[in-house]
Length: 99
Image 1: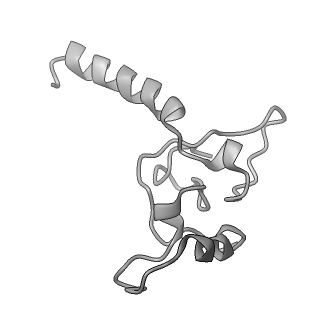
Image 2: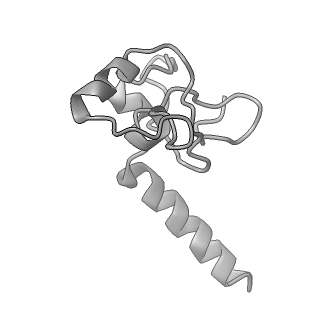
C-alpha cells in the first residue's frame, strides 16, 4: 500500500483533511459550518476530493493502517511528514539539473 495519496493502485481513501473530506462547492454550493463537518468525519465513504501527493502518517507499530479519518495520527497529511520528502526530492532534482 502506498501512503502517498493518489499514488499507485492502493492508497489512503479517508484521510483526516477537511478540504479533502468535505464535498466540493460544485456539488454543495452552500456554506458548511464547522460543526456540520463532524458528520463527514465518521463516514466510511472515501474522500470526495483526492489530495494527490499528500503523505499520511502511515502504519502503526504492528504494520496496520485502518484508513479511518478519525485516526488522525495515521491518516493526517501533516507538514512534518511531507516536508522531509519534499526537501529530499527538491535536493535530488537540483543535484541532477532538473531545477
